[in-house]
Amino acid sequence: MLFTLAWRNIWRNTRRSLIILTSIVVGLAAMIFMEGLARGLMRQTLENQLGAHVAHIQIHKRGFNDNKVVQNFMVNSDSILSVLPQYGAIKTFSERTIAFGLLSSATNSSGVSIVGIRPSQEEKVTTIKRSLIEGRYLSGEPREIVLSKRLSESLNIGLGDRVVAMASALDGKIGSEVFRVVGIYHTSNSSFDKMHIFIPMQNAQEMLHAGSQTAEVAILAGSIDSVQTLKNNLEKKLGSDYEVLSFYDLVPSLVKQIEVTDQMMIVYYLIIGVAMIFGIINTMLMSVFERIHEFGVLKAMGMKESKLFSMVVIEAFLLGVVGTLTGTIIGISITLVLQKTGLNFASFAEGLSSWGFASIVYPLMDYSSVMTNVMVILFICILAAMYPAYRAVKLEPINAIRYV
Amino acid sequence: MELIKIENLEKVYQDNGVPVHALHTLSLNVNQGEFTAIAGPSGSGKTTLLNIIGALDKPTNGTVYFEGVNLLEKSKRELSSLRLHKLGFIFQAYNLIPVLTAMENIEFSMMLLGVSEKERRERAMKAMEELEIAELAHKRPNEMSGGQQQRVAVARAIVNNPPIVLADEPTANLDSVTAHNLIDIMEKMNEEKNITFIFSSHDRQILDHARRIVFLKDGHIEEDVHK
Ligand SMILES: Nc1ncnc2c1ncn2[C@@H]1O[C@H](COP(=O)(O)OP(=O)(O)OP(=O)(O)O)[C@@H](O)[C@H]1O
Ligand SMILES: [Mg+2]
Image 1 (spheres, chains in turn orange, blue):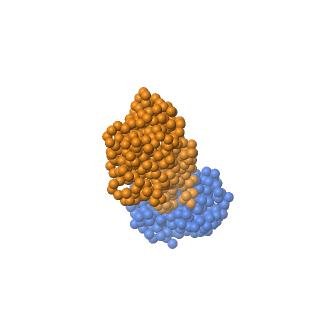
Image 2 (spheres, rainbow over the protein chains, first blue to last red; image 1 turned 30 degrees about the horizontal axis):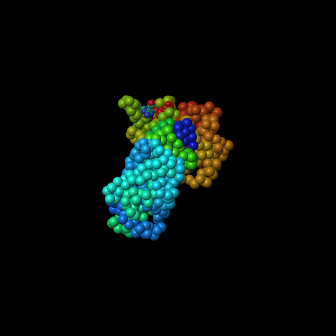
Image 3 (tube, protein in one colour; image 1 turned 90 degrees about the vertical axis):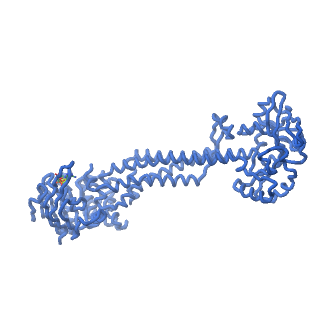
């Protein structure tokens, strides 16, 4: 009966209840959507970077990550390659050489990271092949090169043109080779694009006078959650001659960014939450003050303070239930629709892409955090009703009855 | 049996620092089953006296015994419980809960006592039949006339069978025919259920229904007439 009474009391002042309900609905829907957006943006950025090049785990000779020179190549990677198939957590892997050098066209040159790959391996680990916008991927033929749209523009070259790559070789001399552009790729990360060019492994090793040495093995795990365990296992197996780095080690700034974003969301929630608390306190106080006379009558009839208190709290709670239910439905619907269609930030895209963000963001629904938000808001409603309920309980019936 | 025993009651209000003697040297006994009216001009202390009997207000001096229990020694919580279990109230402005129907308003006072839903329904229905308002069961207060609302209020006050019902000017907002009918049903409840009624009024004709009239003037009893 208290619930019936509370429910009907809410609708005594429809306009006021609708206003506070709207603020709960909009607040929660915005929370759900913003969180989905941030989550989606971060996940996408991470996946793009890992997918384009970093992969989940990289194995190098110890010291290579800090000093990426040919002298730090792995002399014999066969021992590594032979153990990798034992690990079920590994989906696929690719071996690479890496050298910093210069790429020159007839008119211009640019500092680049020259990545030597075996196309059949590499295409399973990274998304570069799928990011091609002109031409084709490396075929296995010698002296082919794949580079980015952005780099081709600054070097003034196109498909079929020749470029010269130069880098310092194992013996200290300068190695160089001529390549023909067979493919041009484009990713959402402009700084990555400007730096990375891909050539056949064979040519890279010859150019660097590196024999059969390679720089790294990039590994893709079956699931992102198994990366840490896999890293630990590989470290134990391979010993101290090698460094096994997960993406947490390789792109710490990105991982940090995700953490910071989570913290920003908390601040954002706090602001919404505080605004909601005051909105509800205000609404409930108004509704209590309007009913002083009525509460006086209830107290005169001997209604227990605890019952009267619950009645006010239940009113706020029911407001919360209606508000969160509607807000959740709206928030989830918006997020799910945009999760399909994506949200186009094209107008900001240049700014975003230099940070490695994609211009179309796909929000990512996380139901468990929606549940948390709903619980928190219901709690807020109950909390915010405490003071108005206390005021109602503390009315002296005799004064309240006289009150008109 | 003596239900209420008031000795040397005094009530002083402070009105902006000025003491107002609402009641003084007032002594009064009320027995179970009485049908008593409190009469007197405006400002004579009728409401003050009823509020003190109803454990809504505390006297400045003097003692009030309810069924032999000294109300001055009771805590707020105990007084609230006493009102719930022993008292029924009828107000001048009816004061039904606006969002509840007549039936629900009557049930409400039983709900406060923890009566089961099924029993509440039955007893509310029975009370409404006795007061000839069964057809109002599903109407809300704003759909009823003043007289109808006040009948529902009577039903609400008596449905828990309290020993006493207090009514401060229950007929002041009603026309005279409706007012007489209301006093009639209060009298009927008094006779059938032996519920004590104390009501106040300044209407001579309404007062004539009472079997005892206590006349107040300037805060004390001027005349106590038993018929
Ligand atoms: N809360 C209060 N503060 C100050 N004075 C009060 C208060 N309540 C009542 N009084 C005064 O006490 C006296 C008695 O008031 P009371 O309301 O009991 O009279 P009443 O007989 O019920 O009058 P009415 O017929 O107008 O209802 C009056 O002089 C009134 O002004
Ligand atoms: Mg009065």
